Image (cartoon, rainbow, N blue to C red; front, side, top):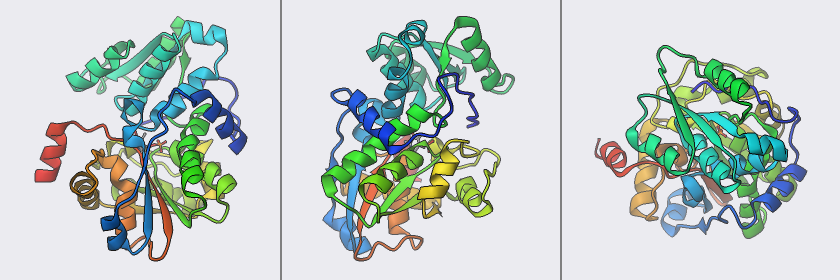
Length: 330
Ligand SMILES: *Cc1c(COP(=O)(O)O)cnc(C)c1O
């Protein structure tokens, strides 16, 4: 999923933990304070103590609601009145649609015309106007900018935006508040909004906690970028982790990740399915493939959890029954 949206909101300044704190105030009473779950079974597998921050139970089914709501709340009243735009076929679209409707802001979401009917319907059901386009013939970034310009809308990108990053950081802040300091925090990444925000919270609330990013094997641009010391762009990766099919980190997310994240590890699709099965059978929760990245890493050789207190961000739960069943049957 290309993602180099140009933010037309405010300035492209790097967020700090102070912005995460402000986001928490805006989200209070609006976003769910999601539960932190534990599992003796998983603890016995990894030899450590895992704390799962369940953003699959967040409003609209993923942490994206936090960043979307915070970004819209950060606009001027005039910008909010004119409305916002986003392009995404995934969780960001639904998060923007819901967050906008809660703030009486019109939202226009650009989605591929061949998106699953359920996704189009879900986005509309939150009150957003859906504009469809031909993903094989039209460039959504160009369309998005045109649409925003013509209708005076503010385009809100999925990750490379100060208020989005700050909003995403609130989940980890809640986690640390509940567990106290941790030894290790595992966070999945696509464009790195969640990882960057989480790492700001870790640095402030649990300074000795090592933060490790997790991405799909097929889409290891984050790991390559950390090694190269610059943003590396890859072709759209083939993976069942559809929330992490980004091609590069962002100009805002990369420097934060570089500063606060120890390393980025990768896991394969088969590992994601094994983790999805554990969530379902042992913990009784529905987690989408991308949300399984951090548990898959804890279970893999790449990360040693023995004797450690480990935070695991479970990023989202938007997978329908038919797809989950097909994946797990395969
Ligand atoms: C968007 C998304 C991600 C990746 O988030 P980034 O901020 O782009 O790194 C991970 N998991 C889920 C469920 C998502 O919706």
